[in-house]
Length: 378
Image 1: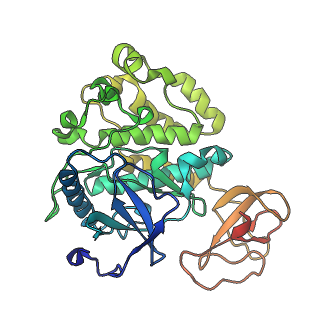
Image 2: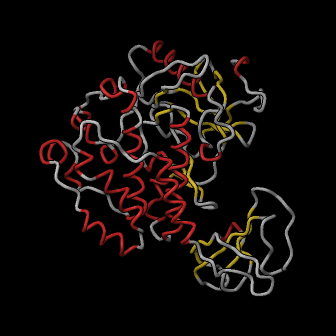
Image 3: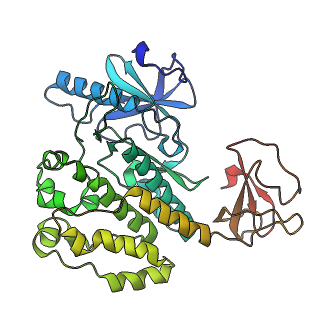
Protein backbone atom coordinates (compact mmCIF):
# COMPACT_ATOMS: atom_id res chain seq x y z
CA UNK A 1 0.00 0.00 0.00
CA UNK A 2 1.19 3.47 -0.85
CA UNK A 3 1.67 4.88 2.65
CA UNK A 4 3.07 8.22 1.51
CA UNK A 5 -0.15 9.37 -0.16
CA UNK A 6 -2.41 8.41 2.74
CA UNK A 7 -4.55 11.30 3.96
CA UNK A 8 -4.33 12.05 7.67
CA UNK A 9 -8.15 11.91 7.88
CA UNK A 10 -8.51 8.44 6.36
CA UNK A 11 -7.65 5.23 8.25
CA UNK A 12 -4.41 3.64 7.12
CA UNK A 13 -5.67 0.10 7.79
CA UNK A 14 -8.44 0.14 5.16
CA UNK A 15 -8.88 -3.19 3.40
CA UNK A 16 -11.41 -4.51 0.94
CA UNK A 17 -14.12 -6.89 2.21
CA UNK A 18 -16.73 -7.50 -0.49
CA UNK A 19 -18.09 -6.03 -3.69
CA UNK A 20 -20.34 -3.00 -3.06
CA UNK A 21 -23.96 -2.96 -4.38
CA UNK A 22 -22.88 -0.91 -7.40
CA UNK A 23 -19.37 -2.38 -7.35
CA UNK A 24 -19.18 -3.56 -10.94
CA UNK A 25 -20.41 -0.30 -12.48
CA UNK A 26 -18.19 1.31 -15.06
CA UNK A 27 -15.54 -0.14 -17.31
CA UNK A 28 -12.43 0.96 -15.39
CA UNK A 29 -12.70 -0.77 -12.03
CA UNK A 30 -14.72 -2.34 -9.24
CA UNK A 31 -15.90 -0.84 -5.96
CA UNK A 32 -15.51 -2.75 -2.68
CA UNK A 33 -16.78 -2.29 0.85
CA UNK A 34 -14.08 -1.87 3.47
CA UNK A 35 -13.56 -2.63 7.15
CA UNK A 36 -14.53 1.02 7.82
CA UNK A 37 -18.22 1.58 7.04
CA UNK A 38 -17.73 5.18 5.93
CA UNK A 39 -15.33 4.38 3.09
CA UNK A 40 -15.24 2.36 -0.14
CA UNK A 41 -12.27 1.44 -2.31
CA UNK A 42 -12.30 1.42 -6.10
CA UNK A 43 -9.70 -0.91 -7.62
CA UNK A 44 -8.53 -0.66 -11.22
CA UNK A 45 -9.92 -3.71 -12.99
CA UNK A 46 -10.93 -2.92 -16.60
CA UNK A 47 -13.95 -4.67 -18.08
CA UNK A 48 -11.86 -5.26 -21.20
CA UNK A 49 -8.18 -5.69 -20.38
CA UNK A 50 -6.03 -3.62 -22.80
CA UNK A 51 -3.30 -5.19 -24.90
CA UNK A 52 -0.52 -3.36 -23.08
CA UNK A 53 -1.59 -4.05 -19.48
CA UNK A 54 1.51 -2.51 -17.91
CA UNK A 55 1.11 0.80 -19.76
CA UNK A 56 -2.59 0.94 -18.93
CA UNK A 57 -1.87 0.23 -15.26
CA UNK A 58 0.69 3.04 -15.13
CA UNK A 59 -1.80 5.41 -16.79
CA UNK A 60 -4.49 4.48 -14.26
CA UNK A 61 -2.00 4.97 -11.42
CA UNK A 62 -1.11 8.45 -12.68
CA UNK A 63 -4.80 9.37 -13.07
CA UNK A 64 -5.87 8.00 -9.68
CA UNK A 65 -2.99 9.79 -7.95
CA UNK A 66 -3.85 13.09 -9.63
CA UNK A 67 -7.55 12.96 -8.74
CA UNK A 68 -6.73 11.93 -5.17
CA UNK A 69 -4.55 15.02 -4.70
CA UNK A 70 -7.35 17.45 -5.53
CA UNK A 71 -8.80 17.33 -1.99
CA UNK A 72 -12.42 16.47 -2.78
CA UNK A 73 -13.15 15.34 0.79
CA UNK A 74 -14.88 18.56 1.90
CA UNK A 75 -17.30 18.64 -1.04
CA UNK A 76 -20.63 17.10 -0.05
CA UNK A 77 -21.82 16.89 -3.67
CA UNK A 78 -18.89 14.66 -4.56
CA UNK A 79 -19.22 11.81 -2.12
CA UNK A 80 -18.09 9.14 -4.59
CA UNK A 81 -14.94 10.83 -5.88
CA UNK A 82 -11.31 10.06 -4.97
CA UNK A 83 -10.14 11.04 -1.50
CA UNK A 84 -6.87 9.10 -1.23
CA UNK A 85 -4.64 6.93 -3.43
CA UNK A 86 -3.91 3.30 -2.51
CA UNK A 87 -2.59 0.14 -4.14
CA UNK A 88 -4.43 -3.15 -3.63
CA UNK A 89 -2.48 -6.26 -4.69
CA UNK A 90 -0.26 -4.04 -6.89
CA UNK A 91 -3.32 -2.60 -8.64
CA UNK A 92 -4.00 1.17 -8.55
CA UNK A 93 -6.95 2.07 -6.31
CA UNK A 94 -8.51 5.02 -4.55
CA UNK A 95 -10.60 5.56 -1.44
CA UNK A 96 -13.97 7.28 -1.63
CA UNK A 97 -16.72 8.13 0.82
CA UNK A 98 -19.64 5.72 1.00
CA UNK A 99 -22.87 7.15 -0.43
CA UNK A 100 -26.41 6.18 0.48
CA UNK A 101 -29.05 5.57 -2.17
CA UNK A 102 -29.29 3.80 -5.49
CA UNK A 103 -28.43 3.98 -9.19
CA UNK A 104 -30.65 6.58 -10.87
CA UNK A 105 -30.70 4.84 -14.25
CA UNK A 106 -31.87 1.54 -12.79
CA UNK A 107 -34.52 3.18 -10.60
CA UNK A 108 -35.67 5.90 -12.98
CA UNK A 109 -39.05 4.28 -13.71
CA UNK A 110 -39.72 4.18 -9.97
CA UNK A 111 -38.78 7.85 -9.65
CA UNK A 112 -41.18 9.20 -12.26
CA UNK A 113 -43.78 10.00 -9.59
CA UNK A 114 -41.47 12.59 -8.07
CA UNK A 115 -42.84 16.12 -7.80
CA UNK A 116 -41.33 19.07 -9.66
CA UNK A 117 -39.61 20.47 -6.54
CA UNK A 118 -37.84 17.15 -5.94
CA UNK A 119 -36.72 16.99 -9.56
CA UNK A 120 -35.40 20.54 -9.33
CA UNK A 121 -33.40 19.60 -6.21
CA UNK A 122 -31.91 16.59 -8.01
CA UNK A 123 -30.94 18.75 -10.99
CA UNK A 124 -29.41 21.42 -8.75
CA UNK A 125 -27.40 18.77 -6.89
CA UNK A 126 -25.99 17.45 -10.20
CA UNK A 127 -25.16 20.98 -11.35
CA UNK A 128 -23.48 21.76 -8.01
CA UNK A 129 -21.33 18.64 -8.26
CA UNK A 130 -20.25 19.37 -11.83
CA UNK A 131 -19.55 22.99 -10.89
CA UNK A 132 -17.15 21.80 -8.18
CA UNK A 133 -15.45 19.43 -10.63
CA UNK A 134 -14.99 22.14 -13.23
CA UNK A 135 -13.75 24.50 -10.55
CA UNK A 136 -10.96 21.99 -9.91
CA UNK A 137 -10.33 21.80 -13.69
CA UNK A 138 -11.63 18.23 -13.92
CA UNK A 139 -13.69 17.10 -16.93
CA UNK A 140 -15.94 14.12 -16.17
CA UNK A 141 -16.57 13.23 -19.84
CA UNK A 142 -19.43 10.81 -19.16
CA UNK A 143 -22.27 12.65 -17.42
CA UNK A 144 -25.46 10.52 -17.62
CA UNK A 145 -28.13 8.93 -15.43
CA UNK A 146 -26.02 5.78 -15.00
CA UNK A 147 -23.32 7.83 -13.28
CA UNK A 148 -25.59 9.49 -10.73
CA UNK A 149 -26.24 7.88 -7.34
CA UNK A 150 -29.52 9.15 -5.88
CA UNK A 151 -30.07 9.71 -2.16
CA UNK A 152 -33.85 9.97 -1.58
CA UNK A 153 -33.37 11.34 1.93
CA UNK A 154 -32.09 14.66 0.61
CA UNK A 155 -33.09 14.53 -3.09
CA UNK A 156 -29.39 14.82 -3.92
CA UNK A 157 -27.10 12.90 -6.24
CA UNK A 158 -23.49 11.81 -6.02
CA UNK A 159 -21.39 11.72 -9.18
CA UNK A 160 -19.87 8.33 -9.97
CA UNK A 161 -17.17 6.97 -12.25
CA UNK A 162 -14.61 9.72 -12.74
CA UNK A 163 -12.13 7.14 -14.01
CA UNK A 164 -12.58 8.14 -17.65
CA UNK A 165 -12.29 11.86 -16.94
CA UNK A 166 -9.53 14.33 -17.69
CA UNK A 167 -7.61 17.00 -15.82
CA UNK A 168 -6.47 20.37 -17.19
CA UNK A 169 -5.41 22.15 -13.99
CA UNK A 170 -2.02 23.27 -12.74
CA UNK A 171 -1.91 21.94 -9.17
CA UNK A 172 1.59 21.07 -7.89
CA UNK A 173 2.71 17.48 -8.52
CA UNK A 174 -0.15 16.82 -10.94
CA UNK A 175 -0.15 15.97 -14.65
CA UNK A 176 -2.66 17.06 -17.24
CA UNK A 177 -4.37 14.36 -19.28
CA UNK A 178 -7.29 14.14 -21.68
CA UNK A 179 -10.38 12.05 -20.88
CA UNK A 180 -10.58 8.46 -22.07
CA UNK A 181 -14.39 8.21 -21.76
CA UNK A 182 -16.79 9.32 -24.49
CA UNK A 183 -20.36 10.40 -23.66
CA UNK A 184 -23.21 8.05 -24.54
CA UNK A 185 -25.26 8.86 -27.67
CA UNK A 186 -28.07 10.57 -25.76
CA UNK A 187 -25.62 12.92 -24.02
CA UNK A 188 -23.13 13.43 -26.85
CA UNK A 189 -22.76 17.03 -28.14
CA UNK A 190 -23.06 17.82 -31.86
CA UNK A 191 -19.36 18.46 -32.45
CA UNK A 192 -18.45 14.99 -31.15
CA UNK A 193 -21.09 13.45 -33.42
CA UNK A 194 -19.66 15.37 -36.36
CA UNK A 195 -16.18 14.07 -35.50
CA UNK A 196 -17.44 10.51 -35.93
CA UNK A 197 -17.50 9.54 -32.24
CA UNK A 198 -20.36 7.09 -32.82
CA UNK A 199 -18.25 5.39 -35.50
CA UNK A 200 -15.45 4.74 -33.00
CA UNK A 201 -13.25 7.79 -33.60
CA UNK A 202 -11.83 9.47 -30.53
CA UNK A 203 -12.96 13.14 -30.57
CA UNK A 204 -10.91 14.26 -27.56
CA UNK A 205 -7.61 15.01 -29.38
CA UNK A 206 -9.43 17.64 -31.45
CA UNK A 207 -11.20 19.10 -28.43
CA UNK A 208 -8.55 18.90 -25.70
CA UNK A 209 -6.06 21.11 -27.53
CA UNK A 210 -8.43 24.07 -27.10
CA UNK A 211 -8.89 25.28 -23.53
CA UNK A 212 -12.27 26.89 -24.26
CA UNK A 213 -13.72 23.60 -25.57
CA UNK A 214 -12.66 21.12 -22.88
CA UNK A 215 -15.65 21.50 -20.55
CA UNK A 216 -18.30 21.94 -23.26
CA UNK A 217 -19.19 18.19 -23.62
CA UNK A 218 -19.91 18.02 -19.87
CA UNK A 219 -22.10 21.12 -20.04
CA UNK A 220 -24.07 19.85 -23.03
CA UNK A 221 -24.60 16.53 -21.21
CA UNK A 222 -25.73 18.41 -18.07
CA UNK A 223 -28.37 20.30 -20.07
CA UNK A 224 -29.65 17.03 -21.57
CA UNK A 225 -29.67 15.44 -18.12
CA UNK A 226 -31.65 18.30 -16.57
CA UNK A 227 -34.15 18.25 -19.43
CA UNK A 228 -34.56 14.48 -19.08
CA UNK A 229 -35.08 14.62 -15.29
CA UNK A 230 -37.60 17.47 -15.48
CA UNK A 231 -39.67 16.20 -18.42
CA UNK A 232 -39.10 12.40 -18.62
CA UNK A 233 -38.31 12.98 -22.30
CA UNK A 234 -35.20 13.47 -24.42
CA UNK A 235 -34.65 16.98 -25.87
CA UNK A 236 -34.23 15.68 -29.43
CA UNK A 237 -35.97 12.88 -31.36
CA UNK A 238 -34.46 9.43 -31.14
CA UNK A 239 -33.43 9.57 -34.80
CA UNK A 240 -31.29 12.65 -34.10
CA UNK A 241 -28.28 10.56 -33.12
CA UNK A 242 -25.72 10.17 -35.88
CA UNK A 243 -25.59 11.88 -39.27
CA UNK A 244 -29.31 12.35 -39.93
CA UNK A 245 -30.01 15.22 -37.53
CA UNK A 246 -26.99 17.11 -36.29
CA UNK A 247 -24.59 16.50 -39.17
CA UNK A 248 -26.75 16.90 -42.27
CA UNK A 249 -30.02 18.62 -41.32
CA UNK A 250 -29.35 20.62 -38.13
CA UNK A 251 -32.94 21.90 -37.81
CA UNK A 252 -34.11 24.48 -35.32
CA UNK A 253 -35.10 23.33 -31.86
CA UNK A 254 -38.92 23.77 -31.56
CA UNK A 255 -38.88 26.59 -29.01
CA UNK A 256 -42.61 27.39 -28.97
CA UNK A 257 -43.61 23.74 -28.70
CA UNK A 258 -41.14 23.34 -25.86
CA UNK A 259 -42.48 26.45 -24.14
CA UNK A 260 -45.99 24.98 -24.18
CA UNK A 261 -44.65 21.64 -22.95
CA UNK A 262 -42.84 23.28 -20.05
CA UNK A 263 -45.87 25.37 -19.08
CA UNK A 264 -47.86 22.16 -18.59
CA UNK A 265 -45.47 20.87 -15.96
CA UNK A 266 -44.80 24.22 -14.29
CA UNK A 267 -41.26 24.96 -15.53
CA UNK A 268 -40.46 28.66 -15.43
CA UNK A 269 -39.20 30.85 -18.29
CA UNK A 270 -35.73 31.16 -16.77
CA UNK A 271 -35.09 27.48 -17.44
CA UNK A 272 -36.64 27.63 -20.91
CA UNK A 273 -34.17 30.37 -21.87
CA UNK A 274 -31.22 28.26 -20.74
CA UNK A 275 -32.44 25.26 -22.74
CA UNK A 276 -32.97 27.45 -25.81
CA UNK A 277 -29.49 28.93 -25.51
CA UNK A 278 -28.00 25.44 -25.35
CA UNK A 279 -30.09 23.48 -27.85
CA UNK A 280 -31.06 26.24 -30.31
CA UNK A 281 -29.39 25.92 -33.70
CA UNK A 282 -27.93 29.43 -33.54
CA UNK A 283 -25.70 28.15 -30.76
CA UNK A 284 -25.48 24.52 -31.82
CA UNK A 285 -24.24 25.14 -35.39
CA UNK A 286 -21.50 27.53 -34.36
CA UNK A 287 -17.98 26.17 -34.48
CA UNK A 288 -17.33 27.75 -31.10
CA UNK A 289 -20.72 27.02 -29.54
CA UNK A 290 -20.97 27.70 -25.82
CA UNK A 291 -23.16 25.79 -23.38
CA UNK A 292 -24.52 27.20 -20.14
CA UNK A 293 -22.00 26.60 -17.33
CA UNK A 294 -22.91 24.45 -14.33
CA UNK A 295 -22.83 27.36 -11.86
CA UNK A 296 -25.46 29.25 -13.89
CA UNK A 297 -27.71 26.17 -14.00
CA UNK A 298 -27.34 25.78 -10.24
CA UNK A 299 -28.12 29.45 -9.58
CA UNK A 300 -31.28 29.47 -11.72
CA UNK A 301 -32.50 26.18 -10.28
CA UNK A 302 -31.85 27.48 -6.77
CA UNK A 303 -33.85 30.67 -7.39
CA UNK A 304 -36.79 28.68 -8.76
CA UNK A 305 -36.66 26.34 -5.78
CA UNK A 306 -36.61 29.27 -3.36
CA UNK A 307 -39.92 30.61 -4.64
CA UNK A 308 -41.55 27.22 -5.32
CA UNK A 309 -40.97 25.65 -1.89
CA UNK A 310 -44.18 25.13 0.11
CA UNK A 311 -44.54 27.96 2.64
CA UNK A 312 -47.76 26.95 4.46
CA UNK A 313 -46.50 23.68 5.93
CA UNK A 314 -46.08 24.49 9.60
CA UNK A 315 -47.07 23.18 13.00
CA UNK A 316 -50.43 24.75 13.97
CA UNK A 317 -49.38 24.88 17.62
CA UNK A 318 -45.78 26.10 17.67
CA UNK A 319 -45.71 27.40 14.05
CA UNK A 320 -42.46 25.63 13.18
CA UNK A 321 -41.92 25.78 9.42
CA UNK A 322 -40.88 22.91 7.17
CA UNK A 323 -39.86 23.63 3.61
CA UNK A 324 -38.55 20.21 2.59
CA UNK A 325 -41.68 18.35 1.51
CA UNK A 326 -41.78 15.14 -0.51
CA UNK A 327 -44.89 13.45 -1.80
CA UNK A 328 -44.53 9.84 -0.77
CA UNK A 329 -47.45 8.10 0.92
CA UNK A 330 -47.70 8.10 4.71
CA UNK A 331 -48.07 4.46 5.88
CA UNK A 332 -50.42 5.54 8.68
CA UNK A 333 -52.99 7.80 7.03
CA UNK A 334 -52.22 6.85 3.39
CA UNK A 335 -52.11 10.51 2.33
CA UNK A 336 -49.40 11.91 0.07
CA UNK A 337 -47.04 14.43 1.64
CA UNK A 338 -44.14 13.92 4.04
CA UNK A 339 -42.11 16.73 5.56
CA UNK A 340 -38.53 16.41 6.71
CA UNK A 341 -37.31 18.29 9.78
CA UNK A 342 -33.57 18.82 10.09
CA UNK A 343 -32.69 18.15 13.71
CA UNK A 344 -31.46 21.24 15.46
CA UNK A 345 -33.16 23.59 13.02
CA UNK A 346 -36.87 22.93 13.58
CA UNK A 347 -39.22 21.90 16.35
CA UNK A 348 -41.07 18.61 16.32
CA UNK A 349 -44.69 19.15 15.15
CA UNK A 350 -45.96 16.45 17.51
CA UNK A 351 -43.94 17.01 20.69
CA UNK A 352 -43.46 20.79 20.26
CA UNK A 353 -39.89 20.80 21.43
CA UNK A 354 -36.50 21.25 19.85
CA UNK A 355 -34.82 17.89 19.23
CA UNK A 356 -31.24 17.33 20.31
CA UNK A 357 -28.84 18.86 17.84
CA UNK A 358 -27.40 16.15 15.67
CA UNK A 359 -26.13 17.49 12.32
CA UNK A 360 -26.97 15.29 9.38
CA UNK A 361 -29.86 13.49 11.12
CA UNK A 362 -33.40 13.98 9.86
CA UNK A 363 -36.93 13.15 11.00
CA UNK A 364 -39.86 12.70 8.63
CA UNK A 365 -43.46 13.66 9.45
CA UNK A 366 -46.74 13.43 7.57
CA UNK A 367 -48.12 16.88 6.71
CA UNK A 368 -51.67 15.54 7.15
CA UNK A 369 -51.67 13.54 10.39
CA UNK A 370 -48.46 15.00 11.86
CA UNK A 371 -47.11 11.59 12.88
CA UNK A 372 -43.46 10.69 12.52
CA UNK A 373 -42.70 8.17 9.78
CA UNK A 374 -39.82 5.80 10.36
CA UNK A 375 -37.21 5.46 7.65
CA UNK A 376 -37.91 1.75 7.18
CA UNK A 377 -41.44 2.63 6.03
CA UNK A 378 -40.26 4.89 3.20
